Image 1 (cartoon, helix red, strand yellow):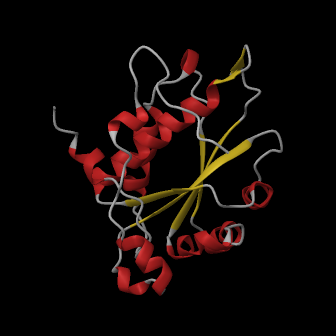
Image 2: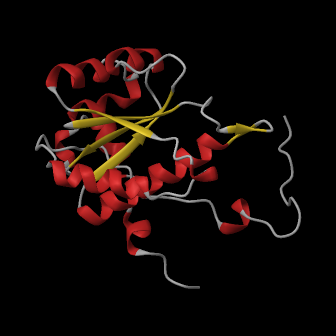
Image 3: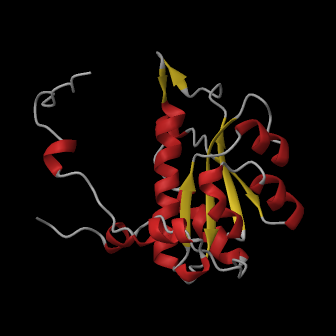
Length: 189
């Protein structure tokens, strides 16, 4: 089997963030990586709103769910958003979701290459993020991304430190791919 790219093998969603700010050139490189993701009809529906000014960051932090409080330590929170009505839904297919997922993965892998910790999260109040960042009502906030440099996991509370120390696991290949036909049985209820 060919080796995985190093950035794929090393990418992990860690929880401990240093307070050090991220330089503008690092942020721009992350967004440049996202910008080059493939997209349906080259629509490039993704929009990234960066929260780093203290009052804006605090407003976005206030939207985090209980399980994502670790992200309050990240010096940057980024909202990834897209307008589903911008030509991105065709014949019932929501292409903007796929496109944004690919852009997010580009950003995550570029972060690994730059030594930046990037942790995507979905546990937030979408309306609250919209309000904090003046995002229009028709635009979906699809994810937040906590960005920063890694910190010592000892800075985390005990439960989060335990989650952070867990090894990365993936399902075995036969559980996630099949050839020529659906190969998985439905689990009994």
